[in-house]
Amino acid sequence: MRRPTVVLAAALALAVTATVHAQMPGAPLAGPNRIARVMRASVVGIALTDAEKAALTTVRTKYTPRFKAIGDSAKPFAATLSSARQAHDTAAMRAARKQLQTQRQHGLATIRTALVDVRASLATDPHRHRFDQNMQVIRVLLQPRLNGPVAADR
Image (cartoon, rainbow, N blue to C red; front, side, top):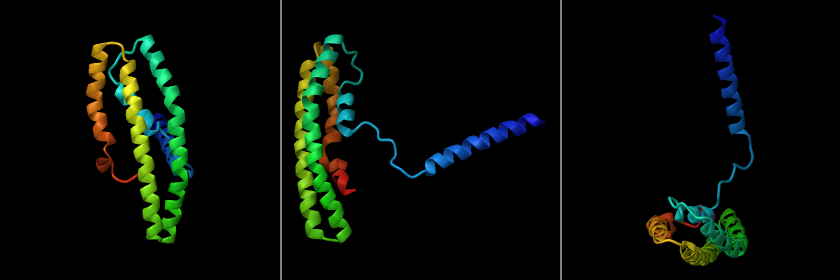
């Protein structure tokens, strides 16, 4: 008779703990950024050889500073957009949104260039064929009109 009570008490304690952690303020755990998700999605289903892994590491080290620079340059525009939104300044909001869209276009161009380099680093035709299949999905994800506004606009 005591056993169900102990199990019930343990389950209740676990539920309370999960609820308390879910209600704690603070930033949620961030997952991989969009660029990392796109790069990973481009090689899904491909069993990479050691040489291909090394080539992909080279591509990543080549493009990481570029992506970081684009992200860092977009932060002031996002802050301007946020402050303009709080001040209800539509002219400033439009200008900041336009600058963010320009930064996003630079980022998309860099992603496309990086993906060309990723495809070039794949050694075998079956790997390149699978990459091309993955790119059909990624192209849809990279289209701005399907993704809606820039992340800072949301």
